[in-house]
Amino acid sequence: MSQTSDPLVGIVMGSKSDWECMRHASDMLTKFEVAHESRVLSAHRTPHAATAWAAGASGRGMQVIIAAAGGAAHLAGVMAAHTLLPVLGVPMESQALKGMDSLLSTVQMPGGIPVGTLSIGKPGAINAALLAIAILALSRPALAEKLEAFRAEQTQKVLQETFD
Ligand code: RP5
Image (cartoon, rainbow, N blue to C red; front, top):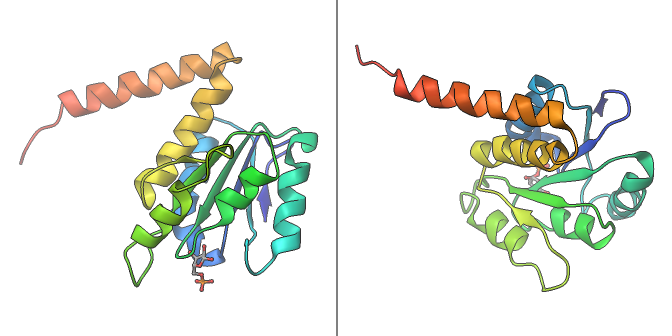
């Protein structure tokens, strides 16, 4: 587990093998100085710990959960079933089916229990963090300013691209 003080965002992933991808979400939150906690919890391998963590997240001050899993990717759905916090799902790229399994099992939630599902792999990890930041920025003007600066910088970078 990795944690900064009083985390606002919780990043959970089904296996340590997901960290190589999910570190990009953590890095983005760190860049924006958003306190967060990252840990491995599995819907299948640690079902009781996973549901207890989700149920307690709001009470511990968290405002957004990012949940990543691969294959039969039920973690984000299980998180969403046990909290009212917004849950962002990141499908991991799987070996067998390249993440299509993860994507479908994360995105196809029954009506009534939403999971905001991002794209497969690294872009999804980065965007989950940016979406979490956008949610938090709704009530934090300083964070909204940082997000605006990030977008402006990104735009300038693209416009200034050159070729060798
Ligand atoms: C899922 O199974 C994890 O989220 C991971 O993406 C996948 C493979 O896990 P390991 O076998 O590498 O632990 O639960």
